Image 1: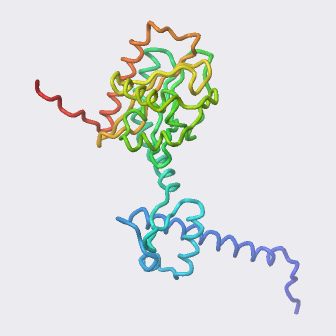
Image 2 (image 1 turned 90 degrees about the vertical axis):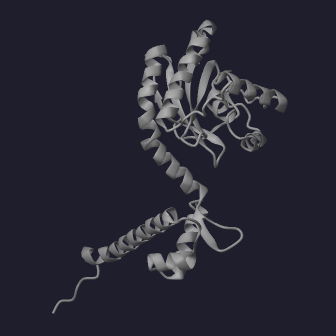
Image 3 (image 1 turned 120 degrees about the vertical axis):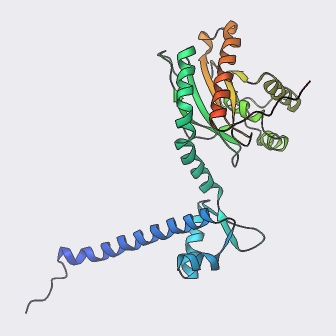
Amino acid sequence: MSRPDPSNADSNLVPARMRDASAAGTVARVVQLLACLAESDGAVSIKSLCQTLKLPASTVHRLLGLLGDEGMVERRADRPVYAPGLELVRIASLLASKVRIVDVARPFMRTIVQECDETCCLLQYVPERRKVMALHAEFSSHPLRYRIEFFQPHSLLWGATGRAVLAFLPPDAIEAALRDNDASPATGAALPARNALLADLSEIRTRGYAITHGQKIKGAVGIGAPLFNSERRVVGSLCITIPETRFNRKAQARLSQMLMSRAAELSRALGYEPLPQAAE
């Protein structure tokens, strides 16, 4: 009777299949663990995770360690319980914004482009990182366009995209952003004096929009208006970017008013309701 040839190709596939099955099992457990954390009302103990997932404590410990290294899970400092990490929150926010905000914002952005024929960009505020990031753009018909880095964090301190958000944050969040002390991405210049920057933010709140020249992109003018949600919190900005050579200062009032109107309409579509005006 002949014996199986150990060099047979089929026999060599068995270890690979086992490795594939093991990897698939690990992925499934990671997904279940993340779902458990996301669906919990608060931080969860390892005992609770083991009971829910029906996994031994050693396995749950190992998975939490791997996810913790990537910022997907964090352990509370005061007790041994676990919650979603900042990186998981960031990714979840990105996915939610792509589905929700972009779909709602797109028609408003197209209207802006139709009205001024300049590129319009939607920015989302990421509070965990004190940054904004571009989610979507509608481009003008002009051949000269600026490259937009989508889903990449950008400073709140420079450019109309960031300052239109920064100006409407709570005072403690503004102070935290100022401590980041980011340099200009366009020129490398340091921040202006604190009082000067706070005065600029005050002006932005008063007029309702931010306008900057060459702070993020050399030779570009940015006009940004804030976006608010149903909790009356600033969640991002709408911004139009114009080459300095094409910018007409006489049109600033018209462009800013148009942008603020569309941003206000988009905010209402996102559930924002302005506070009632006090009776005189």
